[in-house]
Length: 429
Image (cartoon, rainbow, N blue to C red):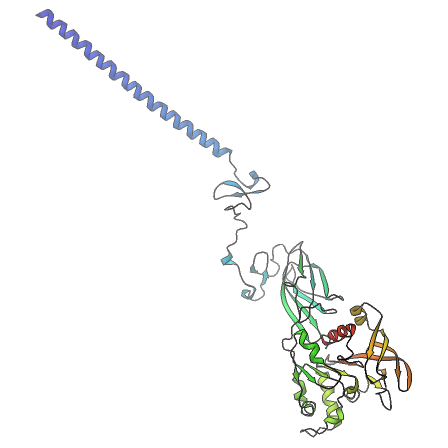
């Protein structure tokens, strides 16, 4: 019995020893597993730290086509979708309009912000090329083109040039920024803004970009007559006009004349026939009104037989053949000398043919302040007369008004070159 108990006790010890051994190994396995995990996590942290240390730390670590994004701490390729350089990322809602600039501020087109003079970014010089154009979009030769604004130092600048025969113009070394461009031709003009960028050429030559003069605030009156059709030239150009239905009332009272910027007097109108007017103005009054009209900065165009509107008001600018100027032979073509530089530039020649379909008034000579545009040897009822003016202009030195006279008409005898001449004349008034 004792031996059986002893054996049972020994067996119990073996079982307990085995259990203890198994429990100890389990702890070692658990402890070993936790150690491996901790070592692995530490290794990963070290690896991550190495990756972070090896990444870009600033713009100097980026390639030429990349920029450094400090938010993400990485280099990104400029221009790719969702990649925007914070240095150049402008919120369009923060962009300003030029009209918002206050005081001495100027508009910087490169940043679309109002800045103080002299603070425009990339303010170095650029260039500008353009084409001046008429009210109908056609090229406008000989237009005056003015460019003004503020330079890189905040100082006012002004540049001017004259458009060539095709209306082309150019400015070089223009300070960067938004400036004001003005096109002027006679009574017609237009002003617009133009942006100049450093090292670039701004082009205003396409139909959508070029700047055309407008008729805004230009009122035109036509005293109709015969052998002329001024309205037929103005209408295709998109120019509005009024027909003067009561010449005596218009020319007899200065205020009635002054409401027009330009007055066209077609052929076969006689100033002396207007003395029967409601203002009891005699011939000298009518002539005085016309002269004051021009001296006030307005313009007058007179054709052929209506020469009395010139000779009575401005006897010093031209002398007509006496005793009767109306001696030019009709049905003849005269090869005229193109005298003025403006007309030479327009036509690209020094001679041109002018056709007279009926008798016409002969100008004998002009005054020293008068510009002859065409002259020629002409056939008259009194024989051939050499070197007679066929078209002239006079610019008033006080009010900058202008008078233009042509011996030829613009209806029955209108040839292609004469059409070009008369269209040009309109934008010189």
